[in-house]
Length: 98
Image (spheres, rainbow, N blue to C red):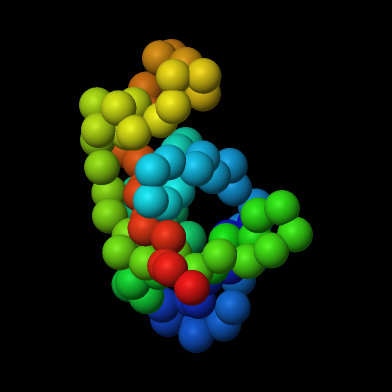
């Protein structure tokens, strides 16, 4: 569950997402593209919180990355999105030490 703040409303939103742990942070597959409200909210805010395994982690430095960089970051055992979905954008965020 990604917890983020609306860039216009200032409201707190909880969006269920599939987050993949990568070295130093998390990677999100942008099934609906980078223009999705939640993506724009996270980019505008400069971060978000992610609820994983019953705890919350702070994420910062959100950035859009391409397929090649995303696939390189994912561990080999993690399945890649099917090609027919034509996903070319991913969101990567760094884990804030704490």
